Image (tube, rainbow, N blue to C red):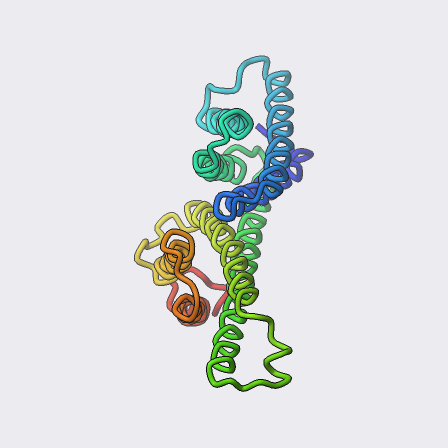
Length: 277
């Protein structure tokens, strides 16, 4: 469906779509209207590119692009983006918008990075390599966000201890107040969770292509989903249960210890994450 001159635009579409999903998640969790507006216009840009690709393909083939699985997937992704834009603009249902975009991102990733649709084997292999690069980059960025969340939680405990023992001094002044430390810790977790989710989606797409006999009990796969669940529980406790203070900081620190275990130990135990060896 694509020629060599369009591949970079499709990769750009995936990246812009990912940023849009991240902002929709931030709005869904944090009720930030500015993030919602930016996400909407980024998604509108994705829709414009998708519509342009569909139009060019119809001009090239002289028919509507639904006769093959790959064509159907791309049209399905276009429909999901269109519905998401309409729901966001007309109904203001953030929960449905976010999960519709997650599904749309999955479908688009499956379509764009499927090598069998490319006439050139070289182009297909290059896109698969770039899929892996995007997956790893997003995973490391999510780990970076979790690391910053851990630092703020650790500083929270230090500040909490200083205040409890009434240790007034320069250290107390140089560390931010408890509410700001807790807020920034939570904010970085909000960034890290959707980024890790999108990274896992792209990683699974790569694994389906390159490691078709991948064992689902692989420690890296299990560890990554457990890590996602751990930080999702953190967000649930913070938002739904209104947990705060020392208990939430301790949960966040324990979650980061799992980040280290997943990155260093489970990576070594994995049967196909060769870049760790």
